[in-house]
Length: 86
Image (cartoon, rainbow, N blue to C red; front, side):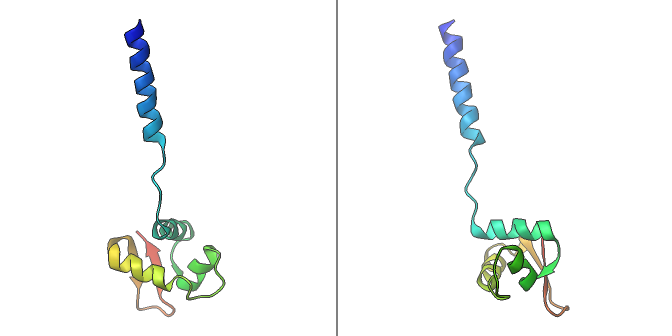
């Protein structure tokens, strides 16, 4: 009986560890917001993130394109540029 209690407590500990959320980077939060709003310009994306100026996400966009270019699609043929999270 004691063995089962120890086993049950260890299983509960493993489950609680697996339920902890992995910390997200700011880039991941921005990409999640872009997925919510869909295809949009940097100004619209920045406004959805709570920024007032249209170029507020310029460095974030550059970091995403440098580190994870497969997560962001850029439509260069439109003015202003449009962004889509993949």
